[in-house]
Image (cartoon, rainbow, N blue to C red; front, side, top):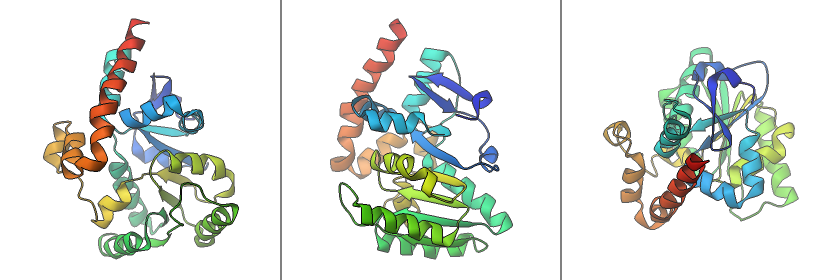
Length: 242
């Protein structure tokens, strides 16, 4: 973690709570996000945990992480969602005519992203690549993905293959990727494409974005919040005793 002056050490991770404007620098950086679900999964997946710990910036993408920082470290930090990061980077790139590459999801989703992006951020050059849908990528798959991303020579690489797959893939291939900023942002691909609607600002301002998402997609999201929520609380309060 390079940004030690803007981080709080909580739950075993260095969590960034600084200015997003500091993301563009001369060095290559990897940006991941942490929420209660990914924390719980990482406790059972050492490779995933190692990927998160080795991210240059780890954003608090969940009210649970914000609350844990307050309870355990008495630090007040704000939630920074992957969607917030995505919008910030697009806004900054649009000011100077930057370029970005979207790696992940379906070709239909990438096409929708491209259509919206060209309308809202006309100064940005954009391309994308949809990898095969599989639990694990073959060596050939990985080579095609890296080649596609590097051939565009983009400033920012957005990776959307859901956690923990995307974080582990980025960690494994960081040295082979040319982009200066590499972000694992999962569901943001669908949010921006419009295939999944992000809960409104009212839900987000109340700290209830998680509830809005669960109500929209109960079959897919219930376990993430209703099952892993109590597990996360157990982890937090067990660390408080120590």
